[in-house]
Length: 158
Ligand SMILES: [Zn+2]
Image 1 (tube, protein in one colour):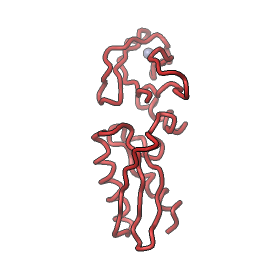
Image 2 (spheres, protein in one colour):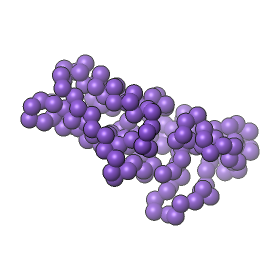
Image 3 (tube, helix red, strand yellow):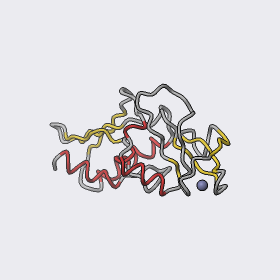
C-alpha cells in the first residue's frame, strides 16, 4: 500500500471534539509512510501541546490501520514546527462553521491580537462578544452573538 493510500485510510479518523472534522482537515495529520520493516509511521502534530484529544486520535489511528491489516503502527508526535490554525484546510473551516464553531480568522503573520474579526457561525454577524477565554475545551473561546444571541465556540488562533 502506498503512502497516499494510507493517508486516504486515515481520512476516516476524526477529531474527537469535532466529530465531523477529520484529522487531515484539521491539519494534525502530517505524513504517513511504510518503513522497511513494514511498520507504518504516522506523524501527527497536536493542535496544542497537552491536548487531551491527541491520545484518542493516536488510538484511533492505530485502530484504523490495524483493522486494515497493518500490524505495526507507530504514531510519532512532532511538536516542531508547531501546529497553526493556518493548517486547517478550507474544507475544515467550512466543517467547523457548520458545526457551529467560528473558524479562526486568518492569523497569518499578523501580530497577535484578539481584535480579529470573528463572525457568528449561525448568522455571520460580526457583532459578537467574548464570554470566556475558554469554551468547551481549552482550544476554544466562548463568544455570544449580539445579533441572534446564540453563544458559540471560537476556535482560537495560535
Ligand atoms: Zn448570530
